[in-house]
Length: 113
Image 1 (tube, rainbow, N blue to C red):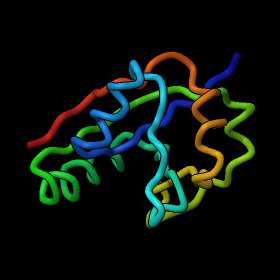
Image 2: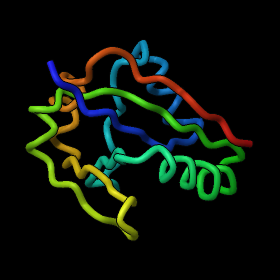
Image 3: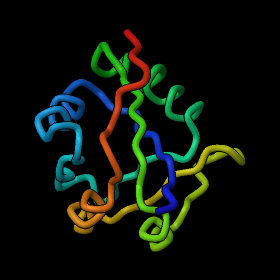
Image 4: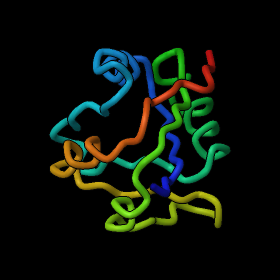
């Protein structure tokens, strides 16, 4: 099955919630978070984790995971700035189904303090 590789910058709370699932699922969004947005570029994820998550919580992580590419096609890719600043926008109410299409484990690939 073809897969799409995605990255997600996270803080320590979200990483612990993912760890609790056996590195298989993203936690539900908070009421004020209507969109789950993994990113399509590792460099962009690094920038967010290092420049936003570290000042906010003292540590930032970059995670990487794979998603069934055919399933991923249902979600729009949004440009959040320059040509490589791309996000996949997943409505919060669809996150359980999204999680069902993750292939393998979610992995922490970078940590910044």
